[in-house]
Length: 201
Length: 180
Image (cartoon, rainbow over all chains, first blue to last red; front, side, top):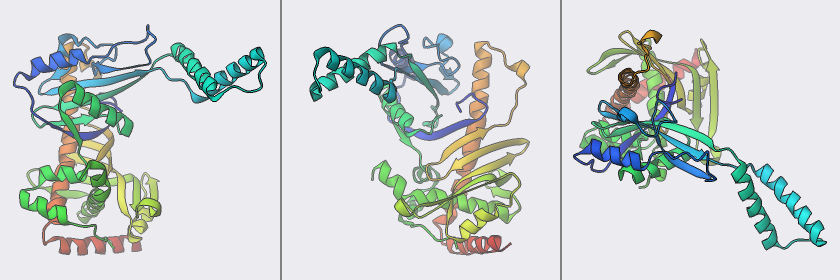
């Protein structure tokens, strides 16, 4: 579903804000600062960063591989250790039973149970393997547009925040009404703002 | 107005466009004239999603079929539904694209671009990879540019006094198509 796969699924953004004159130096510095850091050998729960669109293990960008002509092509990689709610529930209950037996009490306090749940979560997160998600993007510098290869609203919200953090530029999803603003002259845009839905039968 | 409100208030614009595009493509047997590009082929096929109403009264209708005349979908139009999603076949010169357009958010789904390179040309050195990426981007952007131009053609009519005449033609098409 990405940029280089057999068929691609994407939405369009406009990139708003001033691009620095020495853009490629700026881009090199910012992309390096926000590149992906692997968490396979740590206990971190979450990691997000840029990788090469061609290879999700490449976050060093040899040959400045994010630069293709007048485009910036990148993949946003998110690795996350997740614990399934069913697993967490099972281990929490098991631990509660064990403690109740040990202390010979019929019930545990709410605070104690929350503490057990959090401890179990931490124990399970450490055991969980990070699950990767990779989303491609392609930024057209001359037009100030960007294609993002995901339709999930969650992924889009993460991209909008992370892009802003990296490049200090704002992304605006180009829904039809906003796309229209780039296609019409001023008078037509004013007329467009006034129109209401019509019935086609 | 923030984006969330804008999406729901202007949802109709993309759906009106896609419904109009279906009419426009059938008006001349699958060919649409685009200023600056000439005649291009636009055919809506295979998979359609129609919608009417909003919120709790939202109704959806899905139609699939390779060679189907999409009769149910046409009847849907007659019930006042509009197109929310359709598989579109685009052809320009010797190149062909297939894509699904989700109208209210302008999502391009499952876009298939013309294949221009053979597998032997796909070498792994950085220069070749960049070339391949640029070619791929070019083909994808050509599809979005063409859709934008079609959208512009619709918008120009939609905001002009000619829209009244166009609307009569669209309504005639909707009524006729459902009768066949």
